[in-house]
Length: 103
Image (cartoon, rainbow, N blue to C red):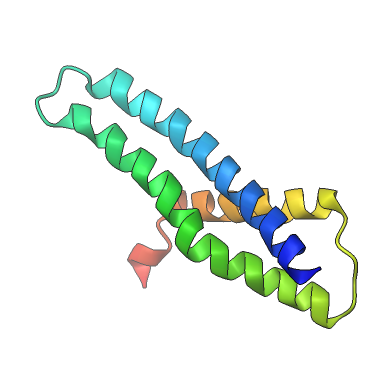
């Protein structure tokens, strides 16, 4: 059951991250399409949209699933959606506020 919880959370985090980064990449491409080197930045944004959930998303999804498993709670699919999208929202908030740059 823990693997199923982890997998559901991970998939929601992956797809929501890809969705957000695709929108960001399309905005970036629309504004920088005439720039000599800037037109290649959307590719980097899309790559980060895949890499972020594949690294930190896997670990945080597994940690959330472990807590649910250790406490013997059942996770409804709607909660997996909230946890997965919540990871993307939290990553976006950290990116926008630049909290890490102040440390």
